[in-house]
Image (tube, rainbow, N blue to C red):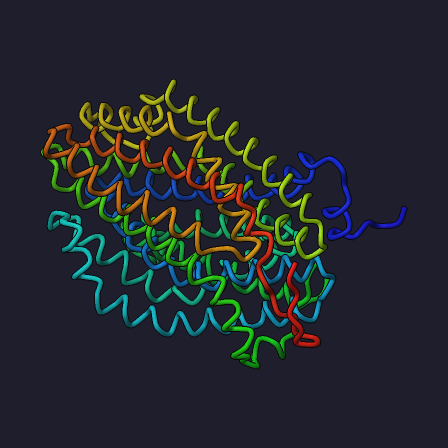
Length: 469
């Protein structure tokens, strides 16, 4: 039987739910593996005490702040590759992927020195205690040196996904995660001639896994054996025109990501100043880690939404792009709501899993987090799907504005007021997060319904003509 091309299948298969699931299930498994590794990291360092958990959580909050540059490059690259895949323009897709590689290297050259120079200042700004500060500083120094592999690994996965190939990144991630777990065990607890390194060991295990993932990803992309082939010459020849187009699409998405990450950063800082900070901070770290399991199917479906949006618009199927978005929103809301409910029902044993010793305060505050945040998770799924649909089309300005207003302008002041003025402490923070998540969904739906996201101009490389669909 003749093999049906991935592009043709995604453009012509009539079962839209099947299309979304076809793209999303490998990403769900991939996300499950990634979150599981994060859980294993926290569980391993949890044996070193609550301060170690807080240190890793603190480090990850800073890492998420730095994701802004990754989002700027990856979102623009995905939008262009998915559109060119829909147009069946492999040359333009390769050029875009090559510029994604070059921009990732350039971003790394900027991020490493900036991160090392501002590391201590940022940790002090978070307001963590001295023991957490020392451990988090050690963790972050290792991370900053791993940034090139962090970016290039993320970019390789994004390129595959933009072309409609979600299975290859899954295979690479399986290998990466095996390396990560083994590396964590060896470096955290010590083995043979390697001494136990504690929190530093968790960072080294992740570093090693990212090196392996980067090598495998870019070998696969340049091999020509998969959905997209990236020519090596396109990775070595900078193109100002293509890079500008990537960044024009990606920068608003980067600011959207920055808004989310600054919000998380400030939420963390608020919690560190509550009366129950000693319990609120680890409860937040544990709660957000658990919440990632509810979030991952929504993000997977969001990635599918972005790919289907670009491919269908590139293939001049605008109505199909809209219908795919609606299907993604329904699936995302349903799956995230179900998983959130599971975590609410079994909140106590899930939280206890992370604790080396029973801590009633952490359990109580963590349960409150899971319950209040869980109530808004279905609408969070809607926001993700609609926002990623618009991003996949290259329409990134208004999704950024929505996130900026709901996550920063409203969420942070509201969290502060509820926590300290109304003296609700951490509970006030959880309420603020949940209410602004609902607001974000409402605003996203309004912008999506306007339909302007389907008419973003993308320039082809072959003939340098503008394609406006």
